[in-house]
Length: 404
View 1 (tube, helix red, strand yellow):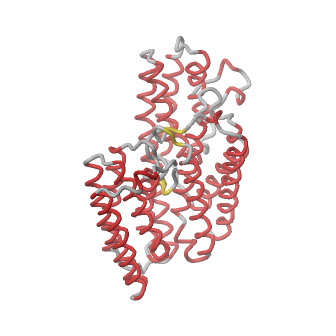
View 2 (cartoon, rainbow, N blue to C red):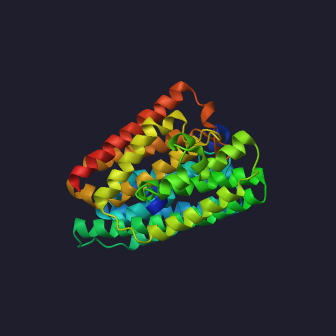
View 3 (spheres, rainbow, N blue to C red):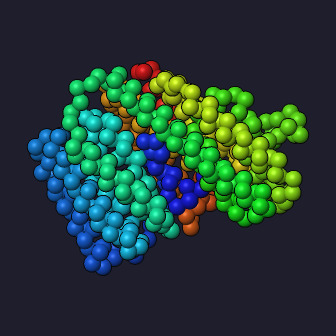
C-alpha cells in the first residue's frame, strides 16, 4: 500500500475511503511571501470571513458560502498543480482543510451523502500538503473530484428521505466502492504478475506495494470468502503445509528474502486466477450495515493487535502500507453509516471523525519521499501510539453496531 504519493489516505477511498490519510511540513515554504502564496493566504482569509457571515444567517447559508469559498481555493490549487508549485500547493491544501473544518459538521448533519463525497477528495489533498514529495497527477485527480463534489453540495436540496433510506443509498455506494477497488486490484495484480514473470524484481516490488493497497482496502469483505482469502493473503505461519502456500506473501518472500524469482511463475499465475475469482464473487455479495461495521471493527482490532507486530509484511516491511489501507477501508464504512449516526448518536459521529483524522495524521508523519517508511524503522513508542489509535477506532466502531 504505497499510497505512494497520496492516495491512500483519503479513502475514504469509497466514498474514499474517505478521509483517512496521511508529515513533515516545510516552514520555509509555508511562510513564503511569493505572489502565489499571498493569493492562497487571501483565499484563507476570505474563507474565514465568508464562514463568519454565513454562520449568522444559518446552517444552510454557512454550507453554501463554505462550499463557494472552497471552490475558489480549489481553482487556485488547480492552477498551482498545473505549475507544479509545491509550496503553494501545500499552503492551499491547508487553507482548504481549514475552511472545510469550519462547516463540515453542518454538511454531515444536513447532507450526509454529499459529505462523504467531499471527504473522499478533501482529505488526500490536505494530506498531500504535508508530504515532502507531491504526486501532482494524483493531486490533480483529487482536485477535480473535489470540484465536482463541492458543486453537487452547492446544488443539494434538503432531503425528505428517512435515515433508513439514506443508509440504504450509502450502502449501495459502499458496494460500488468495493467493486471499484476490486477492479483496481485485478489491474494492479496483473501488473505485479507481469513483472514477476518477466523476472524484473525491482518492478515487481513496486507493483506489489501498489496491489497491496487495494486488497487491504477491501479486506473486510474479502475475508467473507473463506477459501479465497487464505489463497491470496495467507502468511507462512498460517499454513500447515508450506508446500500449499500461495498468494501475495509467497512471492513477497521470494522478492525480499530469497532475492530470486526462480520458480515463481506458478504462484504468480495462481494469484492472478484467485484475484479474478474474488472479483467474480464480489459481484454477488449483498452487504448490510451491521455486517459492514462488524467487518471494519474486526479489521481495525486485528490491525491493532496482530498486524501491529509487523507479521503481515514480514519480508518487505511494508506494514504501514497495509495499515493505512485498512484504516482507509474502515473509514469508508464509517462514512456509509453517517445517516444512522446523525439520527441516533451525533456525538459518536464526532468522535469517529476526530479519531480517523488523528489516525490519518499520525500515519502521514511516516511518509517520506512519497512512500511509507519501512516498519522495522519505527520505534517501540511509535508502534505503541499507532496500536493505541487503532484500538480507539475499533472501540468506537463497535459502538455503532448498537444504533444500526
